[in-house]
Image (cartoon, rainbow, N blue to C red):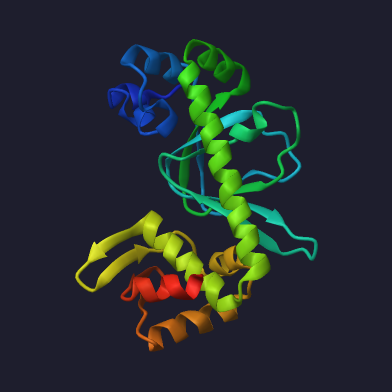
Length: 238
């Protein structure tokens, strides 16, 4: 991990980098400059752990580019991925209002550049810009809802439904219209897909092959899936 004090990139790009973070999008240039002056940028390589479950996470992490995963270890020692975050997302907000240890681990799944704001500096920013507090609260609520939805999927749905649910979610977050359907550049590998669905890697491979033979999807190597029958996948996910 490489740490760089300040964020010269934001100044060079006329603050567009900071404005790409959803909670700061509505700030004026002067307000953004106050934010940028508190930022430290950190660079992580693929597979590097950003924060371990049980450690204190007393800063807000803003993803400039790259992808990260938020995960927990289950009672039987398996990784369960809770969220996948990418450019413009942020995390650490739920730990800013208490001194509790992090309830999850954070890992870079690609090379990633992350801007951080300390708890103390963020408190000053929130006092000056109350609307940001509301956006953070909304993000906490959103992630709690997503975690509850995932818990429901894992507890009540069969394997086919879980994998279909994941593909439908990815189509919304990462999909692009293509002449053959919805093209998804997968944000995670097969192992992480398995950990997201609570199954084995072999099971993921079998289900994707079955979906492909049923002409619901088209698999292009390990990185691309084209969804050709989105509505049928939705039905399977329910």
